[in-house]
Image 1 (cartoon, helix red, strand yellow):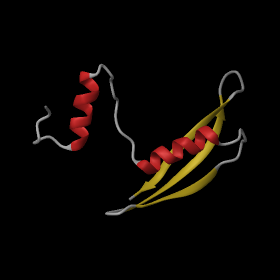
Image 2: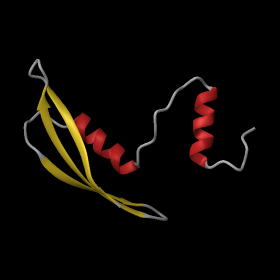
Image 3: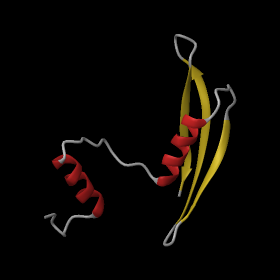
Length: 87
């Protein structure tokens, strides 16, 4: 039984801890969508900004995210996701 006086995020963390999983933190839905886009995007060297809109039932959230690549020591591209604005 979980205490009712802790918020939903803390309840989730407690359940995950009990199950043996360790969570470093949560990301917003917009940031999650930006990370998913970075995983799915084609390997190119372009840098561009995208606007992510979350038109939820109780809230409206906007994120402006910059997507770019840098090359590692083996000349493999590494996806960079930089959240420029979140409100």
